[in-house]
Image 1 (cartoon, rainbow, N blue to C red):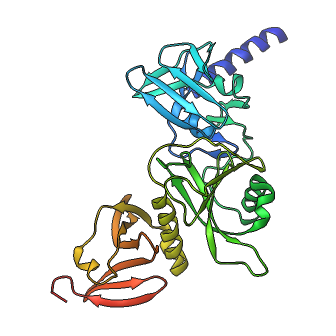
Image 2 (cartoon, rainbow, N blue to C red; image 1 turned 120 degrees about the vertical axis):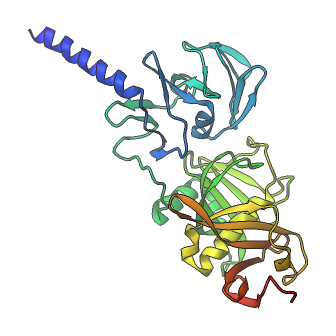
Image 3 (spheres, one colour; image 1 turned 90 degrees about the vertical axis):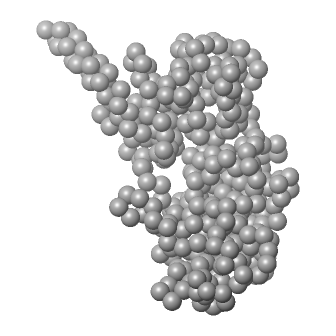
Length: 352
């Protein structure tokens, strides 16, 4: 009778496992939920993860060949190619066989999740009750909303950098998503201002970007250029001499945007909750009242009734990184140079 009960229990457990497995809630790496991830695909009781999410989880860059339907993921030490419908994977240019074949679903290549365990030595698990897919994570410790901890995350930053961390003082600036950048891989980052230490801590030296999923750290000096001069990457307490690059857009605008948001946050902390997006241009009348230069433009928006509502515009000097905000008032527009220097109020409907 006990044997029969075991069989019935096992059957019910399997039934629950199959039903829940088809409704994956989230993907977690090192206890942090990957933001905006593609739902895990369950096919014949097997889990598949989107190639893009796999790349984010391992701190890699990804490229897609639409003709061969092949996704290539690169890290500092790994290059792995997955092709739709093929169980042959190229791992550092060596062909290896996997049990399950990648499949295309809704335009995204879904990769058998077991490759994380079999080829990348990650610990993976599925909780059929909470419907969470865990990568190197403990169900009791996972977090959905990523929040900065001054004590814990600064310690992680210093541990990842190693002995070089003794050269700098760190001040947390903001948390931000990074995509399509030239050197940083896609992911969510804690961003720190860095001042070089001396007898007295010197002024702003650059920024450290710590990937919240992998804890890898990138250092961007303020004078970084598109050729990557001065940019460094740290992993496991050491500098990575020849690290994998994301290979997308420029880098200076990333530093500029970080600088801009930090300046606004320091001016008025309530503005840190706004959403800032790049724009091609702003009202030309505004530009007549600030120094002539090349500028980056931004729109600041606030979420209202589940929609982003524009609030004010921003111009940032691409060379000096000075920030000007344009606040619409009943009697015109206030032009403010941060921190908190009212330049003038203009009426954009009349010639000044």
